[in-house]
Length: 195
Image (tube, rainbow, N blue to C red; front, top):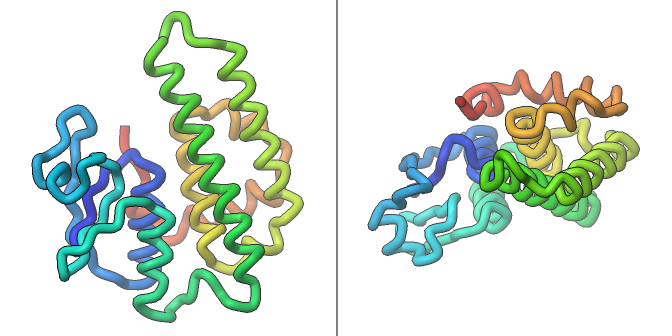
């Protein structure tokens, strides 16, 4: 299987972490977002990152769908356990939403470095802080490695990387302790984005 990705994409990082945790080998093809390869465009005309091309040629082009597919390939570990599936799927979608908000906030700064919309940016940061507080209250579901914990770890990693003030101002001691622990997983260490 081939994965088109960028090192800085939190969505692609989630896929890479899932693959590493499940010991699934992927042929990694790093893309440049400013000039996407013709191979990527050929298999996914949207040019979305990440894109997974299965061995038979089928294409999956959404991190949630890709991760759910990878989770079906083996059961070590099972990242969406049947007995807590609803809660894991719910928390996973919230963590993915955090990534969406953080990416939008970062792109606002990137597009308008001198005159970004401060009101918009503050609103996005408040949303992220609210979500961090929500996860602080639901930290019990993050104790075991699962799809939601991986998504949240990638979300927080991206926030630390792109919006460090949001993470440094949080008041979530359990979440901070949990993130410190999960950040030491080899899958997280191997996928840390570089500047």
